[in-house]
Length: 273
Length: 332
Image (cartoon, rainbow over all chains, first blue to last red; front, side):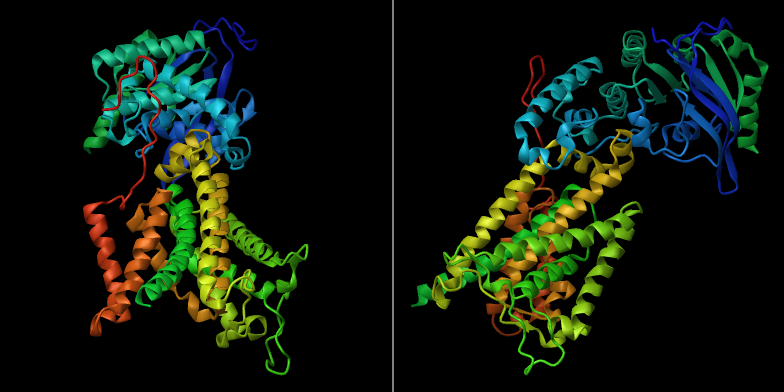
């Protein structure tokens, strides 16, 4: 248990927020993708993020991770302002993410894709390979055994030396998840981790997420359209529509909230119009 | 006599191919490993060549040259009076440093932007450098060219045998650069470069300061090209801005890397020898076939043929294969 975990007794979860968004706005030209969005993510929780297509979920991930900058508003991670930071800077603070469409390094092996991640690596200095090669190879052996363990966890061991570009869609999703485990994150943003992953693997993925949450004390935020997955995995759940939070609560509360249903139906009507 | 001629020609050929191999190695750091689209190799080529040449050549005779004033006169520098020329290494170092500084400045401005901006910027530098040496006659005698550039260890052997000596010099420098680059790109540093080449956003999401690594790679490649330029200057011993036209100083080097195998250092060197062999070999063809334009066409056809038959080049990039760990199946 971290020190910051303070029971708040609000019935949802008893931890202090690790991530706070206040009035975050993101405009793309004339389109407002995120509209004065404010939310808290409690440390240690597995938070679900749902909403119809175009609700602004992935844009929210992009804003939090630092892939894009908000038009206005404030984002805090562990109490620190992170809006305007680059992705490698939020990564250094312990915030990692996956992508909805997997972004693997195609012409690098699966193992290399994972070994890339741990930071900081002494061998990433240009001089290191010339001046202290022995130190680099010692570090490499350590990182490689870590990567081999992660590969076992995500069931990709047999593909360790395969180019990541040759993996199937589902396997790439698992590789994305594996990449977040190679870091030592405080919080992981998973963007549709289950898309294209078959049922059996999805169950294992759920188990891995739960295990990482409990054993490694990682906070998760998960975007997922598979409702069974999200309702069993996540508590609390945040529902978004039109760039803002509709409601936040336990799976039961969210499922029974008429506004959530309306946002899905309303969204489809707008789509049909 | 025939055989002696062929041997002598081959040695001269190997010297030039070896110099081009240095450039191909530098381009491999830029494009092959990091995906930096540098289409202004000629700029670093010229800068390296002129830097070393100007610093080592003796000052011009004021009676013969009105405007041309420069000349570093380092060529007098000996090493402990043993007759070993020290200036050569200082020239190489200065050429490398000049290119490194320019790469730092240009990279700092353009590497945060999209890839196409780097292409434009490098093309711009190449033209700027060439026009600078063309128009500023007081620096390097303008279009009349800079000559009497000193030979490294020129007193050691007779002029007819000099190529043999210089070939050894080239091979030593090329070998050292090859080992240095090979080490660097196979290290975690090189892994980050390859990740950037594959997907910048994903590399950034994996916690890598993409800009910093791109800048380092850009500088390293430019430094290698600067050394190549200096080696070139002390081989041909005459430089004029015309030497650095985009076809021979940029395009041919790209052809070498594409043919040999982008992302493979052995491939870069092999490509330099193959393409330079075709380029110089075709001049012996009879009649119209030795026309320079047709020779460029031949290089173009070669690139297309290699891309169709072996898209990765003759050698192609090696896949880094890990030692199979326990319980881990062999790669399929």
